[in-house]
Image (cartoon, rainbow, N blue to C red; front, side):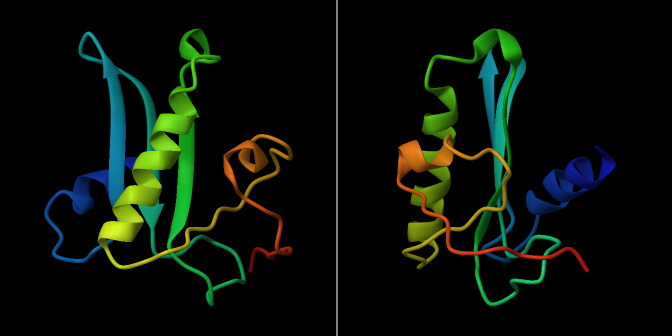
Length: 109
């Protein structure tokens, strides 16, 4: 998606604490990614930072690589002074394995 490409490109040179993007590679090929951003496109602007765009290539799934990216995002948030991170998802059951709990719905504007 163009929006993620633009976000990643601009995160490289910003002085802001967010966005932070982590890319996972295998032999020079990107096989996964996750972002840590200040907001998502939902109504809950009172919560931040947000983990977004967690992705692992299909052929690499089932190896806990998503967990590695989630832990890295949490560590990046702590380094920036935040003790909580949030996410918006419809993947019920996946993130709960990593300590996330449902706190409510957010709505797209």
